[in-house]
Image 1 (cartoon, rainbow, N blue to C red):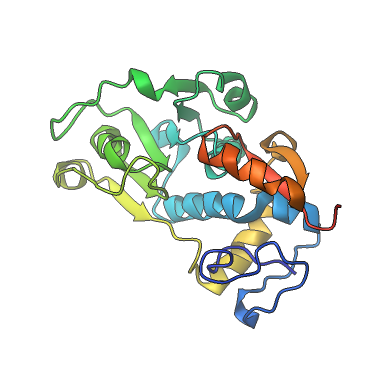
Image 2 (image 1 turned 90 degrees about the vertical axis):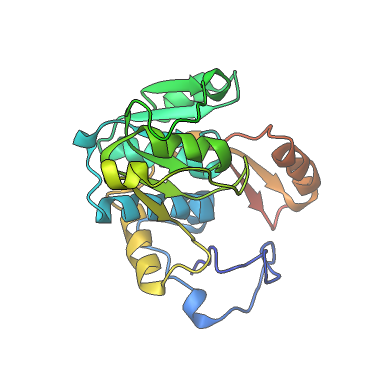
Length: 246
């Protein structure tokens, strides 16, 4: 059995416990083709990326609309989004502020890597459309810019707030290009969606680059050092915690 999201380690204790008691509707059976290590390697980050893609596809996202931009690309959600989109036949463009991340992102299936420091963020209501859609992990000015640059009928999945919580945009992309802004919240995702998405992650949406995304396996004692690296932006992909190692 597995539990991801649901506020575990955010509003409820027990994220690193060997045994934890949770409401029954939080729990999802581990699909037959996965094992405990793989589901925790995928974890909330992989599930969130899958949820974002599912929301986009439910709203008619299609590879023919153009490349999908993934921001915050070296993080857990961003890394999985690149791998999953690539596996589903989408052209992927990764946006990152880490100058040394290009080889890693290309290895996950990104066709191109953009340096976010090179973006000329403007303020006009509309700009040249260039993305079929986007999965945004940062928010703020980057998300505002994305709304102005997505192709007609493209979808933007909004997940994160690393660059800020404000969104400065206009109605123009939505009423002139039919762009959709979709919210993604894995914490309170309906159970029936969870069941379906974990089955997809075990089959047609399985992250083919999982071994590359999992960059380390650590013990409980190593966690303080890992937290420091996360907060300073020095982590790529996912780190799995072996709670039984000593």
